[in-house]
Length: 202
Image 1 (cartoon, helix red, strand yellow):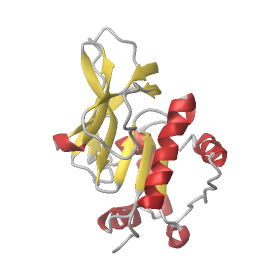
Image 2 (image 1 turned 180 degrees about the vertical axis):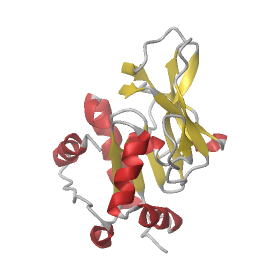
Image 3 (image 1 turned 90 degrees about the horizontal axis):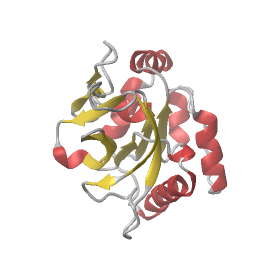
Image 4 (image 1 turned 90 degrees about the vertical axis):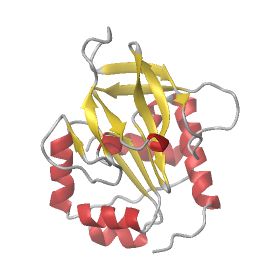
């Protein structure tokens, strides 16, 4: 749904080619998956259902294989969304809520915001640098388990989920492929983590 070309371009800059997954048969040659997306929750889940990928993505996660969600791809990992009626992938407990309209912020939330780290994860650097990322969204995840929340971004007087991580599953609400050098560093860290990570086991 949406930003496949920009994601491919970002990984090409890192000398990492990507293979498009059109259906379950394409998964056999994959070591890790990226689930990017822009747009609305229900049409994205309908598209995944049409490809037959939903049970295979759930099995992929059950087997602790690496998966990176981007933007709408983060929201699809949860059980449901206020934006639609279809169930999500349910890989993470919790749901997706509309950003509050009384926060004194424009919706959709669009522009650059700093990451505020909650829990360390392989997507985040170990230095003291404050990373700014580019956001475009009207909804944000509300993880049921606090330890899943890796980073937030300021929104009005509160915070919005910016990044989640659990096991070998990670995702970011912002667009690393549109976040300049900071986004490229994040994607590079993910690739380096994949290289260091133990082989996938069912």
